[in-house]
Amino acid sequence: METASDGKTMPLVGFGQVVIGPPGSGKTTYVRAMHALLTSMGRPASIINLDPAGEDEAGAAVTLQELLALPEVMEELHLGPNGALLYCMEYLQGNLDWLRDRLLSLRGTYLLFDCPGQVELSTHHPALPTILRQLQSWGLRLCAVHLVDSHYCTDPAKFISVLCTSLSTMLHIELPHLNILSKVDLIEQYGRLAFNIDYYTEVMDLSYLVEHLTSDPFFPTPSKSS
Picture 1 (cartoon, rainbow, N blue to C red):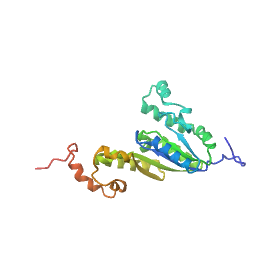
Picture 2: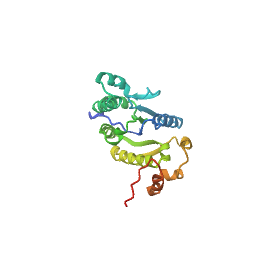
Picture 3: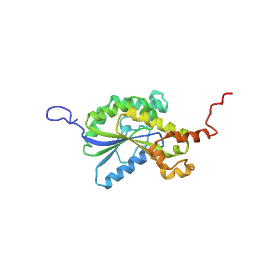
Picture 4: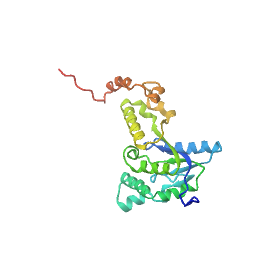
């Protein structure tokens, strides 16, 4: 590990995005597209794959699977996929020197952190926020990019659930935060939206959803008192 002349650890001055969101929301696709865009603009960028369950991402400068991989953890500790993934993140939390050593060689590049899709990591489990706070203490300036599949816009109840999840994530992660509806080009395949797309991006007044909720045959409505 490199050190400054006064013996203190050299800071990791730089910027980056922490890409989070539910499974299948398009995180890896987004990271690859953003990396291609930055590269085409002449800005050095590096992908940091922190998902031990994901594919071995081509072009990733750092991948957590170099430290430990999900299948091995599941086999050795007799854990299911979710429990093994949480163990992997906790293990990374306890071995951040490994991550720092690899990030030192990437100083000066824009960092794209591709994170696991388990929602509990972004809403209440302490491992990911602890890791991100340590990255910031090393001098990195990060923002969170939270992807949500736009098909949730077609169901008022699911959309409200997504809003609650996004709010919980913003409070838990404690980073400058950007919510993005992904796969908007496919949204018409899910059915007609109740409102224009700007309603779902601005989220100004949820009372407009009440009529659509009560008209849903699968949404329970309180019985009228006699």
